[in-house]
Image (cartoon, rainbow, N blue to C red; front, side):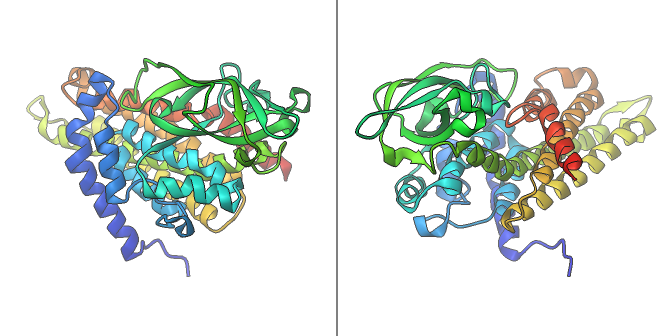
Length: 381
C-alpha cells in the first residue's frame, strides 16, 4: 500500500538532526558566514552524533542508512545553514565513486577510514573549462610502463578541498575518446604533487570551503583506479543520480526556513495599524512558500526512494534538484521582500538565505543542465 509515513527510526533521525541544528548550527551560522569560517568543531560534533557519512555500508563500519535518511538529515541541517549542510553532504558525494565503482579492498581502506575517523574526502570532478561537461575534462592519466599512472590536471570549485584528507576524481586516459576515456581514481592529499589552491571568495555558502585542487605528476598506483579505465564517466553519472536528491533536500530545508522566518515576521510587523500578515499580498507569498516546500519535499523523497530501490531513472533526480533549487531561490527572494528594508540587512537571517540559495541552482549541474537531462529522457521515449 502507498504510504507517506516515516519509520520511527527515520523520525528519530529527524529529531536528532533538528535539535543539533537548533543547538549547534544556528547559533554560529551567521558568524561563520560573516567571517567565512569553516566550522570544524560543528562538523566534528555532527560526526560524533552520527549525522555525517550516514550512507556508508555496514560492512565497512558505517551506519548503512539509505538515501532517504541522508536526505532527511540534509533538510534539517540546511534549515540551519545551507553551507554547513553542503559540506556534510559533499563528504557523502566524495565517498560515492567508491560506493558505486570501488572494489572491496578500496571500500575497506577508504570508506572504512571515513566510518571510523573524522575527516573529509572531496569529489574532484569540475575543471576550469569543464563543469557540467564532464566528457570535456582535460585532466590526464598517463599509463606507466610496469604499472601505475601519472596524473596531471586542475580541478575547480571543489567543496571541502582545503580540509580533505583524500580526493576522488576523474581524468581522461585519451581526450580523443571523449566520455569513453574518463577514468575514476582516489588519491591521498599528502601524495607528492597534490596541492590545494586559494580559497574562493563566494557570494554565499561562505562557511563551506571551496578551492582548486592541482595534480602535478602525481603517481597513482593501479589499486587507486576506481573501476575499469575508461568507465569513469558512467561512475560519475551514477554518482550524480544518487547525490542530486540531497541537493533537493537542502533546498527544501532552506525553503522551510524562509517560510517560518517570514511567517513569524509577518505576524509581528505592523503597517497601517495591523500585522502585515493581514494583507493579502503577504498571504499569497507565504502560501507560495508552503506549496514550494511541500512539492520540493515530495520530489526529493521520491528521487531518494528510487535510488534506494535501485531504480535507474536519472530524470527523477534532475526533477528534484531543478524544481527545488529554483523554488528555493524564489522563496529566498520573496522572504527578503516580506522583510522589506530589514530583509536587505544582516540583522535578519533572510539576507543570508538569499545568498546561500543561489548555489543550489549551480553546483552538481546547473538548473539549465537539469532541464537538458529531463528533456533528453522525455524525448528518448
